[in-house]
Length: 400
Image (cartoon, rainbow, N blue to C red; front, top):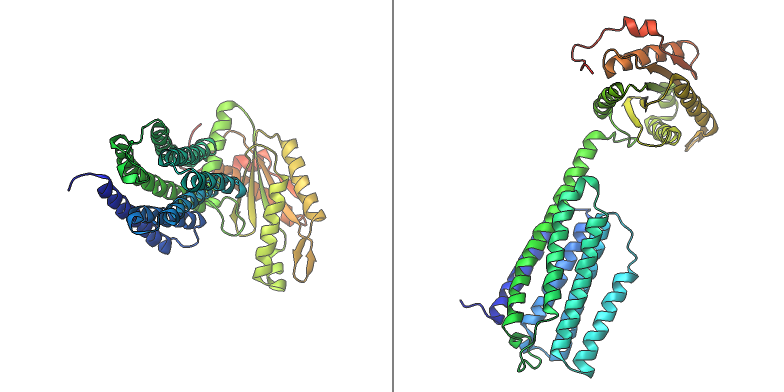
């Protein structure tokens, strides 16, 4: 089988429909993925556009060309919207729609008013170049840190496609082509062949974007408490130990607050576990409001206990933070279906003294928390040096 325009058109059609079917099957498995829905719809519009191109000899010329280009424009708009949504970047719909409308107006003008195939090909090239450049800019400018690999690879593919259409702007169209895109000449034929290859590369780039995003989401879910959205116990222990080692090397202090919701069992018994979950979520939101700037370590340690690691904070600063938490709880009661419920907290504070690991520090804070509860709750208790010195050092403590 020789490679000519009709053959490349058929191959492009088969490739597009295969990719569209593949993404549709993927969407059936990964339901609830709005980005995948947009990209799948864009691929079906691309398939429609290529189909109309392949069937042009058997269809009315003007409607087929207009419908095919409209499908291509819709494909570009949905692809662009999908990339923006993937990157969680706002993109007003009117912007890509305005560009697509301008493109279609130019196609209409040089198809009906001043028929010129060469100009239409240039208009299409400019439109595709702008869309690909826009997508590549979004991928490079707004790539999340944990997704930079897939974003950069995808941006490279879109930039390659943009470069292809930039080259096509300067390629001549065969003088005898008339309105037949199949007779535009060898240079154009080469760009069509390269376009088919780049379409396949773009498909893999889109899959790579989805896969890396899913891996990031899975890693985040493994570190996140499902109820409150804070770090879970294992993530707090791992990140806290790393932070403790870093601060000791820098010779800086570290304070740890162990915060416990007072009388939480009574809340569950009186209003039910759903109300208890609502109180915990309310409690977590208030804790987040009270933490200092930067990147503090806050997580749910278990049950109704929360951990707040204050890097570089002195004991006086940690006391002030604990007081701020208690005041915030008093001023902002939890809103339950039965009415507002004021929640209080007992807090244990421990300062790093350079011995042991994070578990040692947590045990010291827990001992202080026990004293705060025994003293009447709704108060702060600080671990004393004597309490910390009596705690056993964990066998797996990492020397720093």
